[in-house]
Image 1: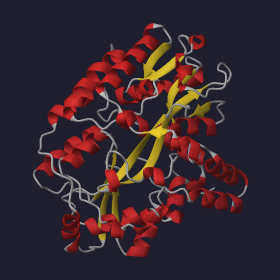
Image 2 (image 1 turned 180 degrees about the vertical axis):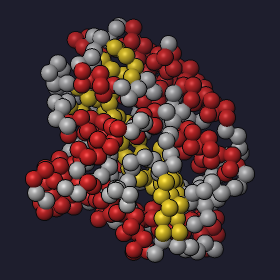
Image 3 (image 1 turned 180 degrees about the horizontal axis):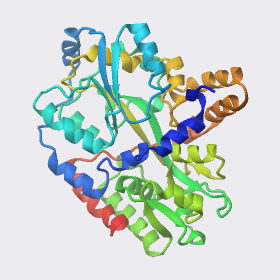
Length: 413
């Protein structure tokens, strides 16, 4: 069995690492303390969005150099031993050699390293990096740290990216970013204890008193408070946040919540400590693939979509080479290589048929594993689920303080 086609192998690698992808995301400064510290620690002057002629001016003088320095998260690309098959194909097709590093453990610490260099217009050592939508990415855009993308050189993105990942609220028209992978926050539950779940209100069902898991992360929990009131987080106001805070406080004070979890909610769900909980799609896919009888739903009122995004720092030495790779991975055949390795949602919907085609050519466990990936709504969400997904509210520094003052005392008080 080829390792890149063996989810069990991948899961083993995933679970053996000390910091999972979502652990790292959680540690990205999205906790209240992290937000406050990050907000205080980043200095710089916000810049206006680039004009069209500024984009042309930047790229007109740039040339392909045949080399690329790529910073990504651990275990976040297809790998065969010490080789990266998709990057080797990229080199063969373009002549660009890639120095690939798993340099990003969490958004906060990585941004803390590169921010002083970017502020001083110094090279950060990478031409391409992957950042999650949230505080650090928004600051990088606002402070002019990212190169505006030349979309005339991104034809595969234009042709093959899912509509849902285009024009995100935190980066309108994908001026600075295109997605690497996508994940969902929904509800997971154990059907042994919980009836079929369709509504977010089940997290407030007194029948599950003391068996409800909620997330510690304030942006995550705030979104679910807002969803419960029928409010779109992207459009929410301070008054909405206060209403959502009241709703979440009622849930806590009624004794419904067993704990506000970090990544450890998965073990609690498997053990039966909680019966129903907020959950990340990739985590539950891994558990189901291992045979656990769990369910994951995007509730009718909505769920959260988050994205890890490719972007080019303004001091990149090889921006054309970086832009070339950004478009290259949007070829369905390359995106298929990635999704068959990474247990998160691909931004290229056409990969589903290609994974099924690979499954049809495979045998035994290989076939079963590939079919499981292709048919999983956690990897390929339905159009109905995608329509219900919303992002985190993009916050100004002043808004962060108010936002945290409302939600931090609920989960950490």
